[in-house]
Image 1 (cartoon, rainbow, N blue to C red):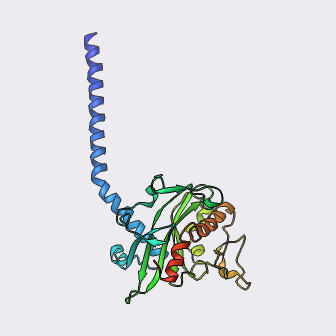
Image 2 (cartoon, rainbow, N blue to C red):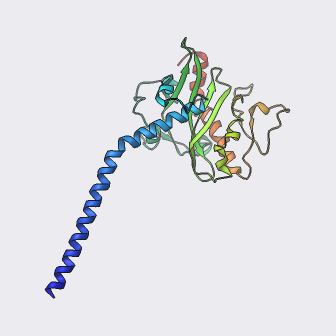
Length: 259
């Protein structure tokens, strides 16, 4: 009996030691790889910002390309730049979950269905050699059919004409809502107009294919076939973030030179 008990104890001891060893290895690897993972996330974000602005070149170093992009923090309510938070370390997604750094949205205010909105946002500016604004790149997000779609929309210096739009994170259905990643669909966005003559956001997806010969086509994007809710979600997030609850005050200040 004692021999049998000793065998059981040894088995348990070996099992515990193996589990402990594996845990140490996994934990050590996670700690050692964390800086690399964070760097990769940062690089991917920069690539997506550059891509939305039509500036990304896969043959060139990402940091070298991003050197021409200036990152600023905007207080959304006033539309003015602020140094309340540090642009280098501020994480808007985390701020949106913090009641002290965000506000709850409901009803018509929550057109993009994001629940909470951060008080401060990061914006990305591209200036020419003389310091004149060429492109502004704005983070956007909103709910589609299955997920919150995170991306960027870039505008020309007139703050009216779209340079490009792209999503870097979503969980929409492949082949349907997932077509927001299709280069042919994204190619429709450059040159489209955002605001109508009354200053309201008009840009959005329609049901079916845009008839470019008809009036209003400059504000329209082909809807996603079989993905009505994703299409509506993209339209809603564009209207929300470029409207009064989003970057509207900031864009107005930029036009007036009051940022």
